[in-house]
Length: 406
Image 1 (tube, rainbow, N blue to C red):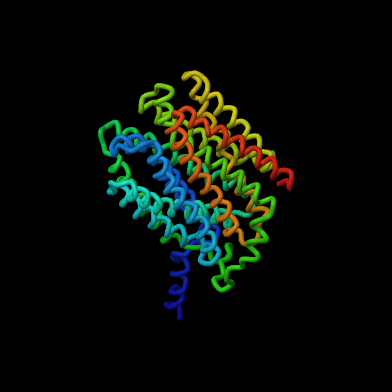
Image 2: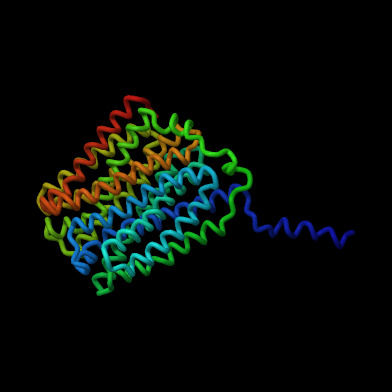
C-alpha cells in the first residue's frame, strides 16, 4: 500500500492542463499574437503596393480594386465568423484564420493576373476577418472587468505588427527583393498562429463553452443588432476604418507623389503612423476607463481629423501630422468594440461580427474610393477623402451619443 501511494500524486503534479487562471493568460497571449499577425499582414499590402503597381503595370484603380478584394473577404468573414464563434468557440475560428492566411499569402505571391490577385487577396481577407471577430471575442470572454483596457491592449499588438511591417518590407524592397518574396517570407507567421491556438488549452471552468445545440436565433440577432443605437455605431466604425486603412494603403504613394518623399522616407512615415497607433493604445487603455467610452471616441476622432487636414494640405514639412493622427486614431476601434460588447451581453460574438462587418465595408470601400479618386483627381485630392471619412465618423458617434452613454 505504501508503494502505490505516490502513483496518483505524480499525474496531478505533472498534469499538462494549466490552472484556469494560467490558461486564461496563455490564451490572452495567443490572442495578442493573433493581432500582431493581423496588423503585420493587413499592412503588408500598403507597404508593397507601389512595387506591385510598377511590376505589373497596374493603374491606381486596379491597385485599389485588389485592396477591395481583401476587404470584401474581410466583410464576408466577419459575418460568418461571428455566427460560427457563437457555436464552436473563438479558438477554432482563430485556427481557421491562420490556415486561410497561409494559403492566401502563398497564392498571392505566385499570382500574375488581376483576377488571381483579387481572388487570393480575398482569401487573405477571410483570414483577417476571422482574427478580427474571434480575437476580440476571445478577449471579451476572458476579461469581464476593464474590458476597454484589455481590448485597447489587444489592438496595441495590431499596432506593433503594423509598425514593424513597413520597416520589414521597405528594407527588403530597397535591397532588391521582389514584392512576391516579401509576401512569401510571412507564411511562417500564419502557421505559428495555427499552432498557438491548437496547442493552447481552453480554461476548464472560468470561460463558458458555446453551446452548439442552441441554433441561430435570427429574431434575437435582429432585435439586438439592428437598433438605432447600433446603426450609428456601424456607420461610425465603417467611416473610421475607411480612414485608418485609407492611410495604411495610400500614405506611401501620397508622400512620394505629392510631398516628394523617397520610398524609405515614405515607408518610415507609415511606420510612424502605426507607432503612434501603438503608443496611443497603450495610453488609451487607461484613459478610456476614466473619461468614458463614447466621450473618448469623440475626442479622439476630432483630434485625428485636425492632424489629417494639416498633414494633407500643409507644406511638406507638416506632412508629419498625417502619421501623428495615429495617436488619436488609436483608441477609436477598440473602444467602440468595448461599448458594443458592454451593451450587448447576449449573442456577443454575432453582434461583434456585425460590427466588424460594417468595418469591413469601410475597409473595402474606403481605400478603393481613394484609388478611384486619385485616378481622376490626383493622389492629393484622392487621399483627402481620409479627412471626409473622419468627419463622417465624428457625426455618427455624435448621433450615437444622443441614444445612450457608456
